[in-house]
Image (tube, rainbow, N blue to C red; front, side):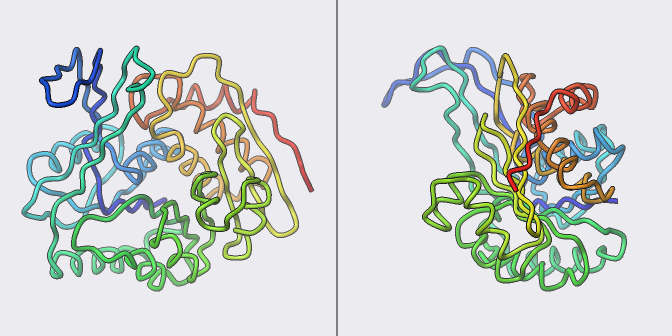
Length: 303
């Protein structure tokens, strides 16, 4: 069983709009709603390719209740504290105007108290014995510390933990030497002041057993011990890349739980990331697409 940790879930709204004018009324042509937040995407992808997943989150108001119900229909069991504020909404704009297309606006999340934070930590600690692999992803809501993942990793003991976050939260988490870390090229540049994703992966490996660095269509660089693997798969028609990194993290989690060799781990991960790109649904994939893309993925040993 794999646990996905998502302290700050969201309703992801895909909004179609022709133009965006400042200080004027702007109307969407269409809007679609999906359960979101990085950890939610991870859990749904894990459930799709492995049958089920558990999700620990912070749930607020009718929006939080709706996400939990949607996850339940996808074989994701949700738990975690319910708070007084509403779970946030995040918008992705789709437009023929390239200046607007793929623009994202993310909500902050519900304001939480110290008691609500402690309830979240206590549920995490109490549930750990049920899992071998734990994924921690995304931002935290107001009231949670930037050291939240640092603290959770300190409780995780011998669990195979996967971290996918950025900024101070990432810097603090690396001090705990998690089992696997997934970052993108931009986060790697901010962290190490390097431009080469392969070099970033090698540097990141100093803090973890598996270091995964993604670079858009260029694919994944995965470092482990003295090995460095590059994997990529071509998608002819990309509809949306929102959530692709999270789906890739889900592939890493499943591969780790099933003890895949590093090359097969990289292959499954990029297949999951690419499978998210070919449908309008944000942060979702289909197992049949993962299987097909897995066969097409190109994997190369750099060293």
